[in-house]
Image 1: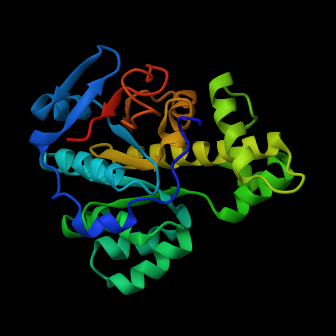
Image 2: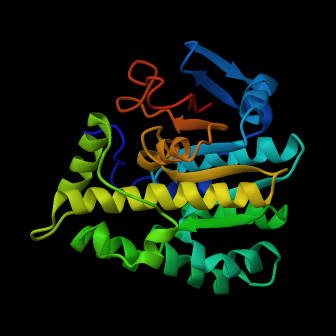
Length: 281
């Protein structure tokens, strides 16, 4: 099984009995470059070295969302403004995110907006969204309209209008062999009918490119802010969104992926994948 693909639906019912929110003193990472573990204040300082901290997830894994919340909490408590960038919301839904954070929507109203943007159970993400609301942490929609990616997957990037292409720039399925293998496995899991692989690959890169461009736009408009970007591990890993950041001459990022025994762990991760592995307590 490809190491970036998530497991099937799992652990959803554990949410009611999940562990208490993790404190800074329980943050533990495996530093890929050095091969050593870092934790506590050292771990927080490592995260603070970057303006953009990408924290990957398998969408249905409760522990991964707890890890993301632990990183957000640690950076928020360490001082300096923090924002949360979201694969889960389209840029066009920013008004709903702003209203949620400011307490201008109740949860029932916001769930409708969430479900319009994302198909995974609200309960998985609720602790993160509640924490952002309670601490007035801006949440930023980074994704593109589903219709755009469907069009690219079905008909190719060249069928987009000039206006649609303007924020993305030139885009081809020119990726590393490893990332192409990841996309091909996803293609096998999701493709239907006579879909063209290159078009599907371009659609994957539209997501990576849009999230990179929208995150950078926010950071440039808010030069004192650090962003924690939440996305699927396949997008967050270095060959995904980070490769698009580098193309835009931005390297002030750290990639954090969750340790997944038997899939992504100390024995298999490399510096081409991530900078840190989050180790569950």
